[in-house]
Image 1 (cartoon, rainbow, N blue to C red):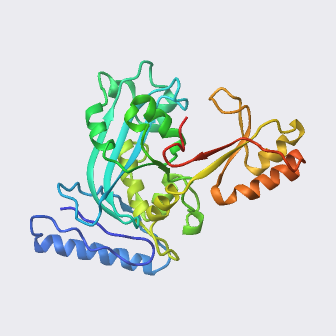
Image 2 (image 1 turned 180 degrees about the vertical axis):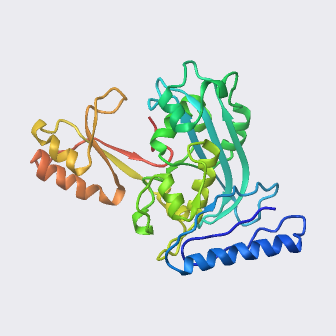
Image 3 (image 1 turned 90 degrees about the vertical axis):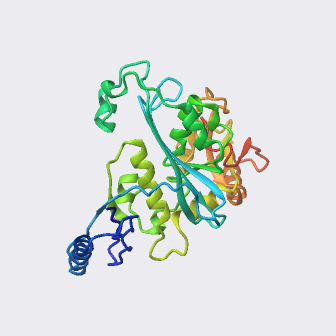
Length: 323
């Protein structure tokens, strides 16, 4: 029988999930004893109990009131460069949600392995646990992928700047979708988290899981997104969904003086060598309402010319995180 408890250091526990088969007296007593043991340990202040993350059940008919469709995607790859490296595993968890950012039900799950054209590097096997024998003869089912991606209103990845280019190289189905990044578009620090890596997030949320396998990571991220915080009146997913609807602006400090490169780098600018279609320049991405402030900085501190007009590119969730 499935058991589900929430253990966030507060002593609060979620009621156990009820299966279609009535639990026996022995099962109920075991659950009650387990909850009591957890409560006593946490009340001492000397222990913090982590619960193994149990994937949410897939429903045939989503509850009404959650008309939007989200998808969490995670990929495991042979390397970091989407132009030459390949996906060896993809995980997808589809779910329903509403306009306020409340998560409804899990509506579909897919995980698949794929044999690459090269041997899997040893460091990738150490990281993911995926080796050449596991992927031999395997191919990701593109029809199942499309069935989950095409209805999606939003695709979420934990580091979308990495996953989106790989996914778009694999299938054009991903290219026309709105994407959100659960690393960069949620203020995890304000929510009491000490880092943004998924392992940190899931641990601080009170869970442990089998990391670096695609579907497991998708379910882990879903649980973290569904949680609020001690001083938050909305969930992490609600914050992410709201952020995905705001446009941002990419500023290219083209023709900036060479001697100002350290100043730009210190402010968060990154270098583009021009090989990816962007201007050859330092660049930064800012929220729309921060554009004027950033242009004032460039004109006063970098160009030292009040009429400097660096190139701009406005981005919505449809364009963000592309290669």
